[in-house]
Structure formats: C-alpha cells, structure tokens
Image (cartoon, rainbow, N blue to C red; front, side):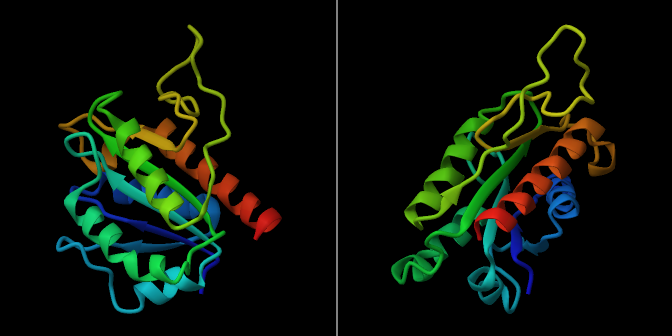
Length: 183
C-alpha cells in the first residue's frame, strides 16, 4: 500500500485532475469518494495503512461537497480509536472563482485533520504576486494553508490552468519529502 493516499471527491472532474497532479508529485495513491459519498472496497484499510492522508474536495457553496462531508462523518470510527493520530495531513480544493470561499473549505479539511490528531502540512510556497506574475506561475492563487486551484465554470477538466496543475505537483512533492523526513 502507498504511504500517501489522496482521498477526494470530484463532481465534474476538475478536483480529480488536481488529485492526479498531487499524486504525480507525491507518488501517492488516489482514493476517490463516489457520487454517493462512499469509498471503494478496501478504502478504509488504505487510509489506515497510510503515513499521510491528503484530503480533496471541490468548494461548493463555501465548503466541501456533501459527498466529502459524508466521508468525513464516517471517519468517526477511526477517530474513536485515534487511528489517524500523528499521520501527516494536507488538503486541496478547486472552485470556479479566484476566491470562491475556498479558504472555508481548507479550514474544514484542517479541522477534520485536527479532530483526528493529525499533523497539517501547508503548501510551503511563496505566492506569485508580482506585476510580472502570470496565471501559469506556481501558487498564483496564493494559498499557504493548503492547495487552491481555480477553473472557470465553463471550462472542462482538460482546460484547467497549467500553472495550477504544476502547483499541485509541487505540493505533492512537498508532501512526499515531508513523509520521508517525518513519518
């Protein structure tokens, strides 16, 4: 089993594309929450064996999707035994607007990790915020507490901003390096 598991829900494919980029950077395994909010067979065992769990959800109405919330509520069983305590945790989200209240989603993911006694890992990246910065620069969205990506509402998953996907891969690399140092 992989040391890093990226557990995520994606309603339209955009968050799945970000999860794939995080997996490319980290060497982690993808664990998709289905349209009914359930994990596939063996999913809970994958999470139990992981050294790091990366949470991902689109931002819908200022928070995680209901499917991700169902998964989070179901995590009360490992919470009760503190099964995820001291594992590395990180998170990411995507929405259509540059802000879109994505920070609320990251706060939700952070709080979930803290309920489980996990060690939260931010992006560790400086924002690309100079006049010369372009949308394809690393961390153009400028998030420190977790990965934020932005996809226009009329763009397909294949039309995602290359800089956001590069940022996701760099975030994955940070997670892998941290796992090798800490876990």
